[in-house]
Image (spheres, one colour):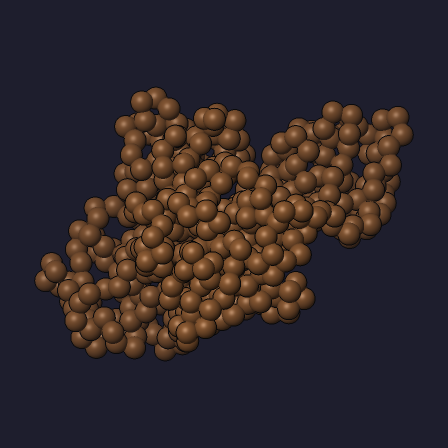
Length: 508
């Protein structure tokens, strides 16, 4: 149905189609040059832009749930009636089209007028909301506040140099040189002034005064709040070895980090990636796309085995080796002396570029000093509120009650952070809606996407459906017979259905 570029072929909808033409409730077509998706649910027929506003995923290959459609690639969700992006990672709406229906014929000719959902914040919404953090959760919260009609003050305090960016792109297409820089910002710079969001960059928050309801900045200034969202995220674990502070040794977290690595690739011929995490291996793939020799050093027996299990770990290693990556597993780097990288096993590697990806740790200092309840993260309730009323937490720092497993979990995933930011925004306005999204992430290695829904820190069984080596598989991670998580390669609809099953099986 689709070619390598994700283009689809379909009928000319201005000429009309029959209801009998629908398959699985969806039909792809065109109005002039515009790609349109028709969706039939019961007696209703909806028409909406055919491609996701996030990364242009083909919605015709997605899943219809009630009056919404979910993207097969990264599980964004759109309202069929309004076109609104109701779930991250998509943030921008799609156009909806006017449907003319007579007997069993359906014709689509023009877009509907679309002013966006006209919502107003609750009457008791707070007057001043402060967001600490400029990452996924912080941005998603600010954007959702305005989208939901919040008219009060929004102050966003970020230690970053750049406005919020699409961080997954930094280790994928942008680092590989396949994506232009204008893909990286989540919104243009003028979005913040036009939306009346006071975004303060290069701003360090040093304390939270819960009683006085204000945050204290590094320069001594204070910012008052009625509601506060802590979205400080995580920071890379630093390599504690001789030579780790040299100019050609990099970590990857911010846009500035990514730009520095890209600048190094102009002259680099050999790179060492320390760590076989998702970030580390995505960096390895991006550097291979730039025709740089890559060696990966990591202590584990298989890359990503702790998350994906041994069979997927072997597959990931083989995939990278097919693209020329050399692995040095069950080993570690002990020193970096110029271009010489020394390994614990006794060998040395030559590298004019070193990228460290040995994990991240949540930024909890502010929360701890503020007296918030901490347990390997900031403890929040189902509404993402911390132990201090009026102070919320979202993203990499938040440990929340997962409604599917019943466990208290903390997850370092981009989509989770965005969805938590959106939920926190609504709850800071007083709506008190429980956060019930199922965790989801994706990882891209060359042309192979790996999707993962759910959360399984431990399992006692992995059920495999399909062929891992053939890049056509679903893996179900089970504990005591219950599926906790599902990983997949090129089984997008199965991944979407697994997410939906978990949503519908949540504990209340």
